[in-house]
Image (cartoon, rainbow, N blue to C red):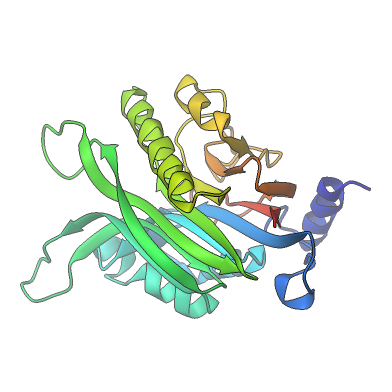
Length: 287
């Protein structure tokens, strides 16, 4: 039986279709070998609100825990942003409740409403069961949603962490590309992404294990995404991801470097805890 078929059968039995994989051989349970298993996921959490637009972080914690992922990329993460997420630090709270390390990369960091309060921030995050060795918040070309008459300009919010997974360095990137119908900003963002990832490859002076997690706001066949597939494998999860209720588009991605990461299987989780569905994938890191 193929991994994907076995995976889907487990998900159906769990009633989640993608929200609970059968546990693979984990890094903690096996000695050195030719490759190292890693389960990763990506999830746009809609600032903690479900498909019903009701803020309910408990519901999202349950959905994330069911993925049983070692590494999770998150988009639309509020950190003391406003009433919609009860002024809570969603990045830190999810990390604490899931017992994972967390790195938050703000896209926006605004002055507080009340002087002296924490800054209001919104962005992407990476959760990891493995220790985060280093983290960086890169600039991408963006068209701001916070100011009138914006023009495309470099702005932060492309998060990168370096992990050590059983001794293997792994670069994980969390991103959220522009949502507008005009693809011009996404074209620039893809170019920025490829440049940053290529710089990491050159800096290491050896093949680098790279994993890109995010909401790309475009289908896999979109011309603006085509350059990404020169270096990366787009992991097909077997279904659409948006909207969470009766999804019709696949705009949420797990993509990996072609020569250093193998794909064992992937699926889309059937959950209404956000307005997107998460994607989860089982990988093998080449030594």
